[in-house]
Image 1 (tube, rainbow, N blue to C red):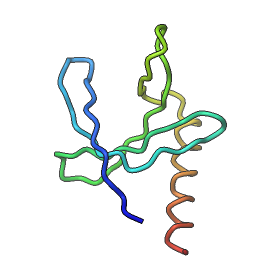
Image 2 (spheres, rainbow, N blue to C red):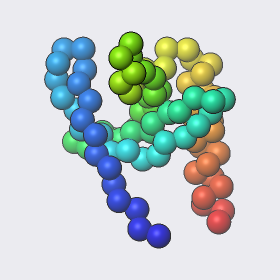
Image 3 (cartoon, one colour):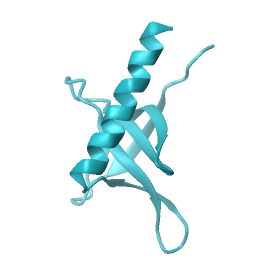
Image 4 (cartoon, rainbow, N blue to C red):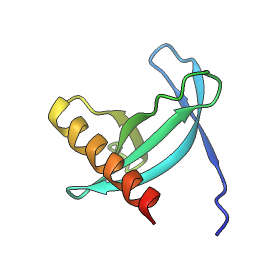
Length: 87
């Protein structure tokens, strides 16, 4: 199975563009989340953003503002990584 890296560009509040590699997309409690790694930064710290839709139905990625929700998603992703290592 070949995996192709998908790179997306996100625009921050100041209008600056940032490229991210999509590491994974996971579902937790009926919501979808994107696990992203910055393309240009040297650190390998992933960020987690939640899929949502605007008033016109366009798909958006937003910060997770609830710490408990963020922890739940991070734990689910970590568990998935652990399971993949075992296989």
